[in-house]
Image 1: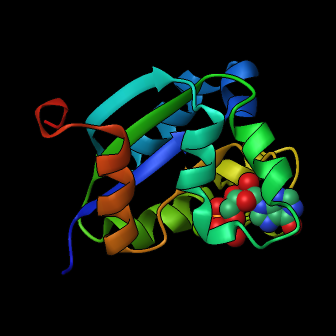
Image 2: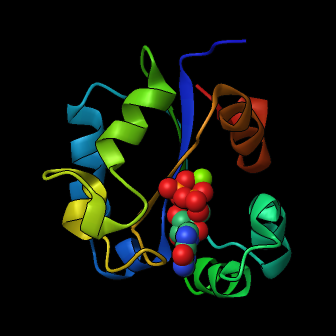
Length: 139
Ligand code: IDP
Ligand code: MG
């Protein structure tokens, strides 16, 4: 099922460094509408569940620790071709490989502390959005 929504998190490093406003400005200026949004903090159980697909990877423990280290901004975004266009906007996982002008190129510190999450498929966008937001919190 193709949808026009994606899910994002501004990760703990981006929030701690004061980049919420600048990143949200770039997202909305790129044509995404905010459907749902909140400042929240993941518990260890939340982060483990959210990133369960990576549980066998060597960086899983580090990822869970990092993602629970401080508040994040979680949001659902809407735009035509949302998932693919948002992945283009945020850039490659490793900021050293991210294109000029992308959010990760501008704000990520490393492949681990990389400022922002973007869903990788319509299916995961729906799962991840529902993980954070009830239907009545989506506009
Ligand atoms: P993505 O966020 O670009 O989709 P994934 O491969 O799904 O990248 O990895 C999820 C998250 O795990 C990354 O955004 C990053 O925070 C972290 N991560 C990925 N690869 C590494 C690594 O090699 N070392 C440390 N952390 C990593
Ligand atoms: Mg991913």
